[in-house]
Each structure stands twice: as C-alpha cells, then as structure tokens.
Amino acid sequence: MKYFVQPRAFTNAVIVLCIGLLLPLLSGCMGNGPAIHEYALYSIPEHGSIEQTTVLKHSIMLMPVKLPSINTNPALLLRPSLPALHPSATHLWAGSLQDQLTRVLAEDIRRRNVIQTVLTFPGPRFAKPDMLLEVKLTRFDGDLNTGFTCTGIWTLSDNQQKHVLTHQAFSATVPVTTGDYTGYVAAASSAIAMLSEKIGAYMVTPAPKQP
Image 1 (cartoon, one colour):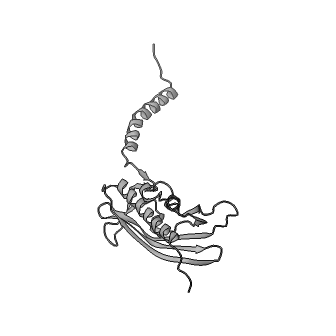
Image 2 (cartoon, helix red, strand yellow):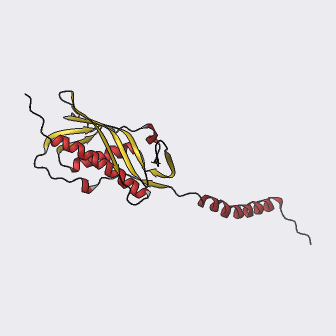
Image 3 (cartoon, helix red, strand yellow):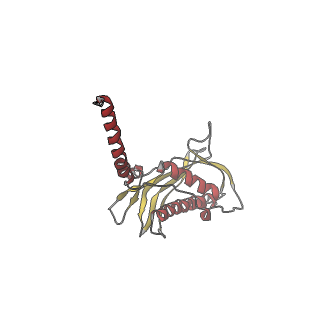
C-alpha cells in the first residue's frame, strides 16, 4: 500500500516549523536592545513651603518657559566641557521638557506662599492676571561629575498697567551628588527651585518709594 502526502498539508507543516524556529530568534534580538529610561522634573519641598507674614493679594500667570533649540530634543544633555554637548540615547525626558519646566516652576512659586494665585498659560477662560512672568532659559544641561547648570532671563510685568516691573538674569550650578542620571534630574529640579526663590524674593521686596 502506498501513502501520498498532500502538497498543501506538507507546505503548511513546513511553514509552522519555520515560524517555530524563528520566533525564539526574533524574541532574543528584540530583548537585547538598550533599556530606555525616562525622567521628570519635580518640585523640591525643602526649597518651598515658606510661610510669609503677608501674601500678595494678586494673581500671576507664568507663560510657557522658553528653551534653547537643543533642549527640544527629548534626550538628557551631557556637557562635560564647553562647547561639547552629548545627547543621551537611552536617558530621556518623559514628555515635553517645556511643559515640565512650566509646571514645576509654577508649583515652586506656589509653595512659597508669596502670592495668592499662580496660573499657567492659558489659564482659565477670561483670566486677567495682575502680573505676567516670562522665563527664557539660555542653558539647561550639565554633567554627571561637574554639576547641572541653568541660566536665563526672567521678566515680570504688570498686566494691568502694561509695563515691565523687572528684567533679571539668572544663573545656578547645582552639584550632581550621586553621579548618575537620577542625581542629574534632582539637580535640575533644584535649579528651578532656586529660580523660583529669586522670583519670590523680588515679589515680597517692598517697592522703592517715589521721591
């Protein structure tokens, strides 16, 4: 008696066997890629929560923080020396860095209890804040050994009288105490808290009397 293998059944069996052999190989290739780590800025409690005897009965709106074009890349930037700049391929900001900066700076100012209401653009509908705060950063990067550096200019304006109250430069370098990317983000968060400290100090300083 002779037996014949159907061509279609034989072909299907070969396909199933090939898939079974290839799947472990593909899984191994996919699993060997470098791990991606994401980080987010955060408000630093020890730099905030300052009780003021007088809280300004005003509102302030923080406009979106402006960044250097290189910081639109999601990579954390390492600058071991000037002008060298190395974006990390595996250590990234979780989402928009501009959004994180704006949110954390607003929260840091809010924690200082120097002004009654802190809004972020665009704020609630028909909002008419008493003051506008604009921040333009010119550097926001660092190194795991030498520290994190944040520089920029901030401008506070009277939104009712339509004039600039102050226009000031800011610079801070914070050590990366742990020597890793977690410490890098902690130092970046501390730099933003220091900026909020400068802004808060200005707002509670009495205006000079007119002669």
